Image (tube, rainbow, N blue to C red):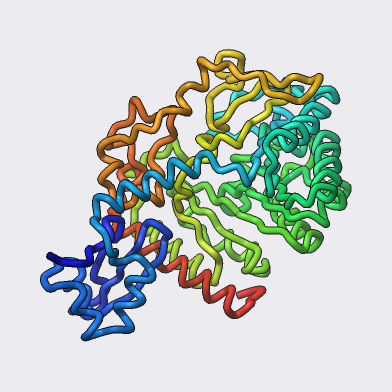
Length: 440
C-alpha cells in the first residue's frame, strides 16, 4: 500500500513538454516539476515514498507544502472541509460593514443596487454603530476590527464616516485592537478632509474604472458638478497613495468587449502607482454574456497587467464567504441588519435583524438566520479540487445551487487555465514584494 497520497485538492498540468505545474488549492501554492516526477505523483505509478530516496529535497518540499500527504486522501478532504466550517466561527476578527447611504452621485447602468435618493445614516444610528463595536467586544473580545464602508456611495455621507472612524481609532488604541478600514467607492467624492481623518489608519480601497476616459465617462455620469468622473477617480487614487502611507488600492476594472480593446489607455493612467500598494481586479460586467468576449483578448489584457508588474486579481477566490462568518454584520443606514452586500434590496423583507440604538446590540430574527447553521455542501463542490480556495456558494444559496452555477463555467475557464493565471499572478506578486518595487 502506498504510504503517501496525492493531495485531493492538487491539480497537475503540463506547461511545456518537460515542465509541469502543480497547484495546491488548499493554500494557493504552486510548484514546478519536471514531467517525470510529476507523472509519478499524479499517476502514483510508483510508491511515492521512493521519491524520498531518489529526490529527497523535492520530496521534502512536496510533503511540507502538502502537495503529497501522509494520510488517506478522503480523510484529508473531510478534515479540510471541517476546518473551513470551523473558520466560519472564528472570533478573532470582527467585521462590520456600514452602509452610510444607499444613494449615489452616479448612475451606472449595470449597478444591481436599489438606490434610495437622499438616504442618510442618522446620528442616532451612527452612534449605535459605535456602541455595537464596544458591546460586541465586551461580550466577545476580538483582536482585529475591520470596518467596511459600502453603499450606495459611502463618501456622500462623510460625516458618518468620520464619526465612526474617530470612535474606532480611539477604541482600538484603548483596547489594543488592530483596526482596518475598508472602502468600496467610485472614487469621485474623496475629500482632503476625509483623507486627513483616516491618514494614520490602515486603509483598503476598492475603486472602479469602467474603461478608458471616454468609455468610463459615458457609463459613470455625475448627477452634478464636473462631468469628467474618470479624471476625478484617477486623481483620487493617486491622492490616497500620497496621503495614506499604510494604504492599499484595488482598482477594479469592469470590462465588456469594448473596454479590453483600449486597455492600454487605462494602464497608462495607473503606471506610476506603487506596485506594492496596488492591485488590479479584472471582472466582467455581470450582465455581459461571456460568449461575447474572446478569451484571447482577456488573456492578452492579463498579460499586460502582469508585464507592468501589477498584482492581479482575476476571479481570485477567498474561501469562506465573509457573509457566512458568524462574527460579521452589515448595518444599513436605517439600522436594519444584514449579512450579504449583494442582495437586490436592503429592505425589511431581506433584513435579518435590527440594531438597538439604545445599547448597540443586534436583535436578530432567529428564523431568518437559521440558514447559517447549514453545513451542507453541493455534491459537485464536495468533490471539486478547487473547493478550499473557492469555498463554494454561500450558505443561503446552497439549497438551490447547481453545478452550472460554478464561476469557472460562467467564465468559460477550465480549472487548469484558472490555476495557470493564478500562478502567473503569484509569481508577479512575489517579485514585486521581493524587489520592493514602487513603480514598473
